[in-house]
View 1 (cartoon, rainbow, N blue to C red):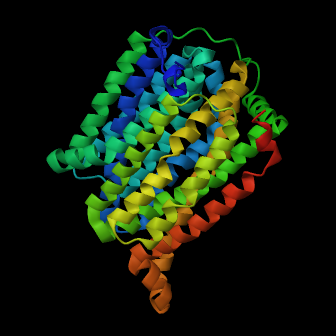
View 2: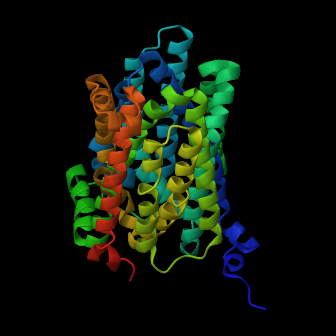
View 3: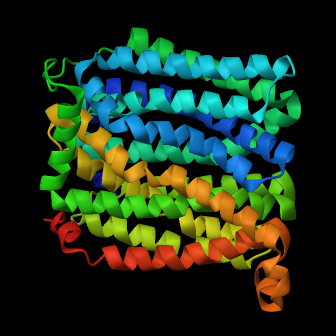
Length: 434
């Protein structure tokens, strides 16, 4: 009797032993990521309720991503030169310090929105060094034959975090308030940091960035690699466009859901999105590696862009939003897993830090721009009362900030669908399937 494909793709005991170090790092970092995500969720709710502005809330993410993007291309060169474990520990420790400072300001009654902007900007700077080091660390700890499985597990943990964050954050907020959420975040950081420091030994990486090479030359090396590999470059530019639309969506989501359904509705959409990602992650783990990764990436993003935005824009109830969340997020883990495996197998290990950093600068520079545009457009549409002046628009999307956010989400759906259809025909991206 022939073994089903999904059963043949399950890990054996030998696979688990081979991936032991990766699994230890992956599980503890996922726990720490849960704590950080809960704090971010709670601060979004705190800032929106305190200020009542989509732009003010969106600026939290702008301040995180803008410094990250600006220095990322140079930070990758530093990451290639430095000890990867030390980089991860220092960057995580700095992030924990900013979280602790937030807690102290909150407990003394001095926390203001500009404090969060400044602390998020400092964290973004550290993340620009940490992220390339994290990618190289994953490559070092993972046998090449296990790249697809490792990518699927990373997508799985991301989905679990997205699923658990709204419910856990809301529960802890109700029981212990924002200080309780932050305390949980700091506890999960301690577990991850101690495990990395004393429980994981990294293999020695080959020298990748000569110390006599200037930061500018190292940054140019990463950009030059992408320029010479058109398929990867075009894929990154495609994802930059997706990130612009996705970050505008994230800026508009609280303004769309909180006025109509409160914290419960906003949290429900996040939980259902996480559940959909968990289901997609299970598929990513169980299904065998596809032969055409680029096609999977384009197809899953098309499904997401052509469904969720429209259902959020035209729906007024959590039920329709949740249907959109399922359709919008179930394919994302498959996209992430195939993107991760495609890049990890295409990039030489000695270049990964610099190339990932160059990728970050190109692919993620649209995120702060999207948050800024999304928040500003929602506030501007709401203040202009343009929706109320056109009965058809107000009937379709509603009035006030929620209606303005709905109108923006509808436009984002049109733009995202057109972007996916256009890049799915890109010859350079299709060449990656070979």
